[in-house]
Amino acid sequence: MNDTLNSNTQGFDFLATCIGSVPYLDVEDVCERILELFPRAPFWPQFVNRSPLETMILQFSEGLPFLELVEEGKALSLRRDNLESELVSFYEHFLGEDLSYFAVGRKYSRGLYEVADAIRRKGEKYGPYIKGQTVGPITFAAGVSDHAGHTLLQDPELLEAVVKGLSIKALWQVRKLEETGKRPILFIDEPYLSGFGSAFTPLEREEVVKILGEIIGYLRERSQALIGVHCCGNTDWSMIADSGPNIISFDAYEYLDTFLLYPDSISRFVHSGGAIAWGIVPTFRFTGKESVEALYQKLCGGLNRLRDWGLGRDVVVSRSLLTPACGMGTMTPALADRALDLLVKVSRKCRDLF
Image 1 (spheres, one colour):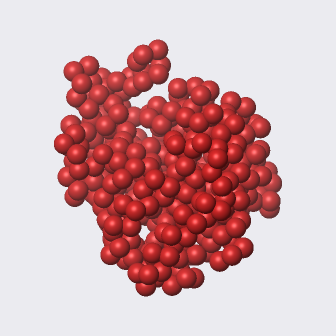
Image 2 (image 1 turned 60 degrees about the vertical axis):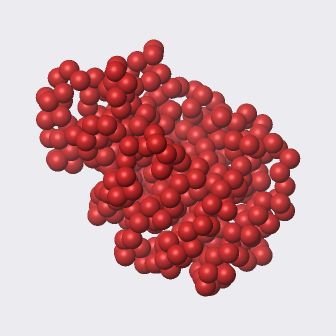
């Protein structure tokens, strides 16, 4: 585990923010609501229903080599012609830290620009954080294949380029978020790791730790951003902790019990300065009938377990964030409204009572 976390994550005190995707269409209205609901840590929304370019993998594909849009611009495919020349050009831009070459364009991320611009205009109303997100390199590589069905995960040379490309794109995003005057929190989203350990996962534990550690280390060497790893399913949480993030983000509604199967790793992570983003409001199984009190009690079950492991009350409080379990892009707008309302109220209740 990275030993440089120190006290970077102290003082969260059940701060609320979100994972990224939303079901809405009105960019300006939604961004304004986000700033109102989450003034301490606004997040920029991914409008996945507005354009396929805002979906997880396509959104971060600009500037990466050997890729082409297929299925009428709704998916990516691995293209192997001119591979060597594309890699040479890519590494020239990467090694030169040509951040503008790896920018995430406005048509790929309307929410990023809208939220960042709004905070820059009225920064005194918000802070101290601004939260962003990027697709994780493992999820990206698993989601792109060639015409024969071979994914980027199966090609070590191309996988290495993906890790480096997403690292520098993440750095561009951090620089963009820093322009607001707030400290960036950047989640690396790795839903693919929900299947880690199955027969369909070609990577070993050490490879996952190395890949995540590379992008985390790249960002940490070049910025003061707080880096989180988000996985919305069950995985090896000791593996995530060992990759060195500042924050571990998980679905605390569905997977609290399995997360708590790693007491030694989680205790060491929090003791070393790491924070936990408790995804306490369900998304995929959200019914709209959930209550603040029920979610609060469920959260307390997890918080109390950490205290049973010897983590002090103040430590647990100061290193806890609250989020939805995952992105809300698959929800209806009405249910997403209800989920956001619950999240804000649970956060407020925790801050009042702890």
